[in-house]
Image (cartoon, rainbow, N blue to C red; front, side, top):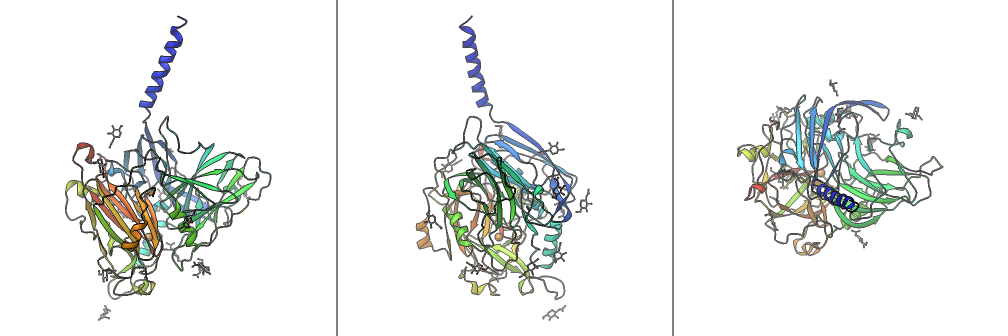
Length: 571
Ligand SMILES: *[C@@H]1O[C@H](CO)[C@@H](O)[C@H](O)[C@H]1NC(C)=O
Ligand SMILES: *[C@@H]1O[C@H](CO)[C@@H](O)[C@H](O)[C@H]1NC(C)=O
Ligand SMILES: *[C@@H]1O[C@H](CO)[C@@H](O)[C@H](O)[C@H]1NC(C)=O
Ligand SMILES: *[C@@H]1O[C@H](CO)[C@@H](O)[C@H](O)[C@H]1NC(C)=O
Ligand SMILES: *[C@@H]1O[C@H](CO)[C@@H](O)[C@H](O)[C@H]1NC(C)=O
Ligand SMILES: *[C@@H]1O[C@H](CO)[C@@H](O)[C@H](O)[C@H]1NC(C)=O
Ligand SMILES: *[C@@H]1O[C@H](CO)[C@@H](O)[C@H](O)[C@H]1NC(C)=O
Ligand SMILES: *[C@@H]1O[C@H](CO)[C@@H](O)[C@H](O)[C@H]1NC(C)=O
Ligand SMILES: *[C@@H]1O[C@H](CO)[C@@H](O)[C@H](O)[C@H]1NC(C)=O
Ligand SMILES: *[C@@H]1O[C@H](CO)[C@@H](O)[C@H](O)[C@H]1NC(C)=O
Ligand SMILES: *[C@@H]1O[C@H](CO)[C@@H](O)[C@H](O)[C@H]1NC(C)=O
Ligand SMILES: *[C@@H]1O[C@H](CO)[C@@H](O)[C@H](O)[C@H]1NC(C)=O
Ligand SMILES: [Cu+2]
């Protein structure tokens, strides 16, 4: 009796431990109510579209291996979709979200349930609307922690905070976009950047009690999960007097990278450790744009939040010195110097044989005004602003999603003739041909690239100087890619290939291609479906800076896309 009881307890404990590790994958279920919300920012009230009455919307927390189910009720006046940015969506492409690529929009008054597994990735991702400009206010963090019994590849932080950077208009953002699309001009600039939905107290009517604050205890280390949810602004981010250690980007672990400044493009995430090792006080965290294009007239007021030490006595926060808006060398140092963590459990070796070699120019251009009579448009040369990849300016279908057309073998929705090389070779980054009328005009089409299942794809992304050079953050849905090299000027096959990092390249889902330069990425197309690749500046996406990959099914049921869910929205 005396012996049996501890033995039974031990057996019971072992069973519980074994069961909990088998049963560690959970179904995490949430409901999003998307509807009008009246907010007060910058001395004005504004009706925005928001999830569950908050800006940012709810933070979703899962563990690697979980199934996420989100019921989205569209009670807004606009067509809606939600994208789960950076999630692989293995065999669940129906839940990816970009409008007319993987689904038709959820109409006002309708709903759709997004259901997918989260496997093989952990860290910080986010969700956002993927239609029109709604993601300006429809966004939130999506945090993937290690599964039960697993740990981070760095010392466990004492606490953690999502830091979601945003961009705010004192206007209805759908109207701002539509006004620009109608005239052919560039859309109105935003009025402020934000940290967790607040511009911060350097802006008018943004008193300190509205400014986002995080509490820290002296001597403790915190994990800050920084997300750039801004529509168009790449951002420099600093915390006064504090050093930061980057441990992950785009939910992919990195070697520790020590810095006092983070640079983050829309679509990207950066996880940093911050030790509260300074004298107890108040310290601003602040973000200001990295404006890679010349001549942009953007806000030079920093958005701020406040790091509050528990023992602080002073009430005046200390401000960091931020880089100049055009500090490309600071941006490039950060963007190019981070390396991937080969010892991560999710690391896979870089495939050395390439099946599809692509060279893709990315940048701005113009499309013919096309207004009746000889009316002119308000873009450069009285035409319309446009953007393209390999001179194909992407046009969304209107009657069916590309994925549904692929699945049902329906013709007339998209073509598979996206060029693997630029159709015209020219001195891509030479600013003297910015407005060369023989080069700058482009045309609309829905050209995609068909890929065999599991093909290895390498893409040289080359920025052009047409209209103007600019750093474009190119985001690929459905896959992470290795960033093999980056540089300025025109990519040189002979010399730049030698710079490829096959040892520990950074792994990302969004690459900020250097302004007037290039980046080389490689990925393995091991997931059937339709995967959008596009500029994550929402000023350029509707202009056509996009294309898509159509990846065939593999040979087995476990590599074949299942049918769409019963509530899949139709056009
Ligand atoms: C959103 O709001 C609905 C209705 O109040 C609630 O049932 C749901 O739990 C909320 N979802 C989240 C993720 O907070
Ligand atoms: C939501 O706001 C828009 C204006 O942005 C307005 O036209 C619409 O009537 C509002 N809808 C509801 C249900 O309040
Ligand atoms: C998601 O995970 C569940 C539970 O492990 C599994 O039954 C289901 O087949 C998975 N779905 C996909 C699309 O792989
Ligand atoms: C864009 O800015 C112009 C000039 O300030 C203003 O007249 C116009 O109303 C703005 N458009 C929208 C949709 O807010
Ligand atoms: C915030 O600060 C303002 C001005 O300092 C004050 O009028 C207001 O009552 C404060 N609001 C809250 C909720 O503390
Ligand atoms: C920049 O924008 C501000 C406010 O919108 C305006 O006052 C200023 O004149 C503009 N500057 C230039 C150089 O266009
Ligand atoms: C950045 O802008 C400043 C003026 O605002 C200018 O003096 C400087 O030359 C610019 N630097 C670069 C690298 O363009
Ligand atoms: C990367 O860092 C190394 C030293 O840490 C430095 O020598 C190099 O210039 C950096 N690269 C860039 C592009 O700044
Ligand atoms: C448009 O311009 C062309 C060439 O300048 C001219 O021949 C034509 O009459 C114009 N049409 C209208 C409707 O003004
Ligand atoms: C793009 O195509 C247009 C025709 O649609 C042509 O005029 C232009 O030269 C091409 N430009 C480039 C850079 O390929
Ligand atoms: C895809 O190809 C890689 C080699 O490039 C191979 O290791 C892997 O098993 C393949 N995956 C599938 C699902 O066939
Ligand atoms: C909303 O989506 C439906 C279905 O695709 C489409 O017919 C309609 O034009 C869209 N509305 C707007 C305002 O884009
Ligand atoms: Cu862009």
